[in-house]
Length: 155
Image (cartoon, rainbow, N blue to C red; front, side, top):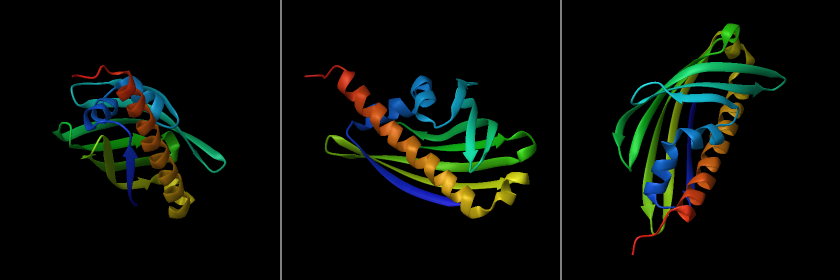
């Protein structure tokens, strides 16, 4: 399953980068996030509740940040276990480009699922993944814009 997208954010690239690396902001921005915490320098442990149609599954997983080029880009690799439901894993590349006083966030997600969750079908999984990604990056845009408004301007 591959997903791509772009979010135009009314904030500086630095504010977007800070938001993407702020654990409290991530907790608020990740749909279904129940718990998230740093588990090392570039490693995050999280639990997320995902609704797949009439089924809700709680995933426990690890996210690792690599290829960090602040404040331009990074790679996020994740693996989550959903108990008897199976697993979901993927790699997301995030790019931040300045566009005047705005930032264009571009993402490329390559993911896979296995176990009983995969039996739900690729269409349902794809729609759910798209919904979660769109909501997450829209939430990041809102949080980064608020951060930008609250941060003191240098003269």
